[in-house]
Length: 180
Length: 227
Image (cartoon, rainbow over all chains, first blue to last red; front, side, top):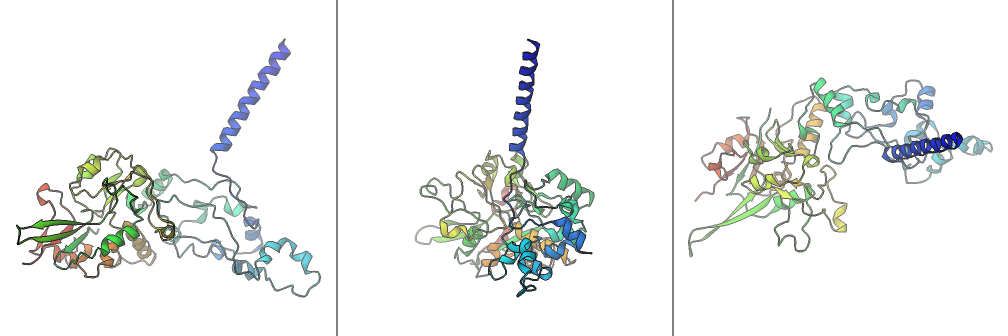
């Protein structure tokens, strides 16, 4: 009798946990489509001394948008023609096969944007990075340590967080200076 | 801090409606669907208002381009229960679409009838969809919208000026209607700057406000036609 009760009780608990887990999964930010290349941020920052974010995200200091790297930025280091004519090159280049497949194409690497603002909010990278001098990690804290592209939705920054920082740094808190 | 305003010279205005079209295109205003305009539900932030003066046979048709007046004492702001509309530091009567609950008190309070309620989800014909302005959000069904004095242009101009570490230059921020006017009937600028053309015109003897007796203190000033 007691055994049956224990089993029934554990089943109820397990069912409850499952419901909570499913709920959390549904409410979590959306699942992202896989990136065409499993880019490893940490590896690049470790291997290349002094590599800055703006080497790949080229417009972060000069434009409202940061930009995603074109294939030519990758080819600066991963020379697509370096191994031409080398019989052993195929094996070496295997892990770069996706990157190299764009070598003779007109199209660029179709990265998926993982972060963005609501359609009614204007956000300028150059204003935050160049004028305000914010570090990229202030909004993208885990990016330098990522070993693979994020698979779940982007970080969410609430308006309270924006306002808190704006008030602290005496930036404008006028609604129409961000909302459009 | 600037106090943005506009002067419209009715002597120069040829009623070509370039401002109306420019405003529609710049601010992603959806064209009305069949039957909607008949019900008075079409959206036009900038509109040409016509009225007649005199008795037959001496009748004159007058035409008045009418954007939001961006009043210094805006009646719409006083009635908004959720703070979705407010007067900004620079005098722009802003509308925060995400905050609007669609109660339409403001559309009723506005004596100039420049506020528009979105009765429907906005729809554009296929060829126009790629021409939408990415700098302006698309308003959903159920919110009120109005002329924002193209403040997205101000955001961008401010952004560039701050980046280049200089003050905003005169003429760097101009709304689409003013920019498009082929007759230069519209002048835009800082009303508080005594050097600016707009403030000098605003103090001319021809200057008048629409419905001046209401005390709304509009920042859109008209110059009456010379006889």
